[in-house]
Length: 353
View 1 (spheres, rainbow, N blue to C red):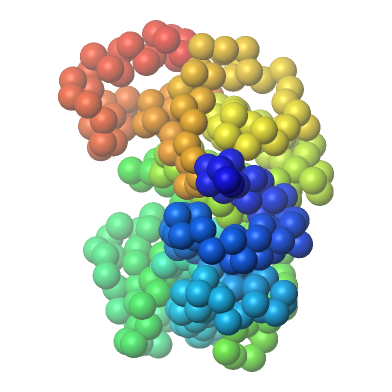
View 2 (cartoon, one colour; view 1 turned 30 degrees about the vertical axis):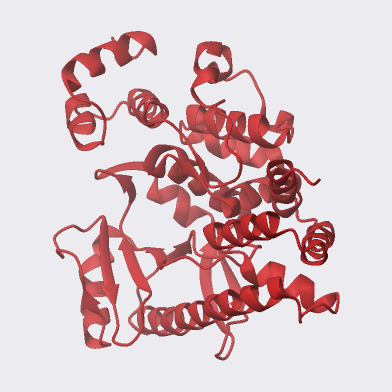
């Protein structure tokens, strides 16, 4: 009998390492097995990680589109395709409007090699361009869904499109940046994007290593959750040039974020992240390793909020910004008595002066 947990773990590993051929073979095996429990586990996995389109495509290629599994995946894949169309139409309108208005921007955390479609489009502009960008979007029919005074991240939508545009002037948690805006704009690249359901268009995105950097920071500091596509994009950067990613991590003082991210991936999937190891201080703090080694069957993988807090406090300490510890702790969903917790953390990770 096939062990469902081990199968999903192996499936995750081949997906994030880009071995879609082996992933397809595993899906075919399950489709032909008629094991109800395993098939249901696969369907839930596909929905949770939004990869039904990959699985359905694999079954089509192997000529078993008439299976029960394929029928279910086809519906979900259709929904993903529709979401991609909505995203790309909105992105085309957004990019065209900003470029016509002379507003510089970078799109980030929106595309990935697995084709996973999120609920929003993340885009950053310079603070001095924020009001111009807002005016342009309002004139093009975008409606704000947030207070426009919240300039570091403001949501917009257009009629009959469920995708949200998150307009950033910084990438932050609680208004505190975890990657510098200057780093993002200095790693801007221009691409010709082959959109779904619309004509190709040019736009600015982050290069491979800056995209991986933002995903590491976002996963650990903001969400305390590592998604399938986050792992895939980070591994792509590691494969391409690990030294570049290490350099960015060091410059942004996200050593602890990298530590927690890589420890989680190594413990869950057995994928070596040795190429990212170095003499950074986080590696020396072996006591932190136990925070992220609790095993989970499949992604998204969850991190304890303590990992987020330690990472953010360390970064603030390293960049010497004057942020209040209590300001951070009081806004993060964390147990009571923030002052006591803050004091303990500062002593534990050596952030006190």
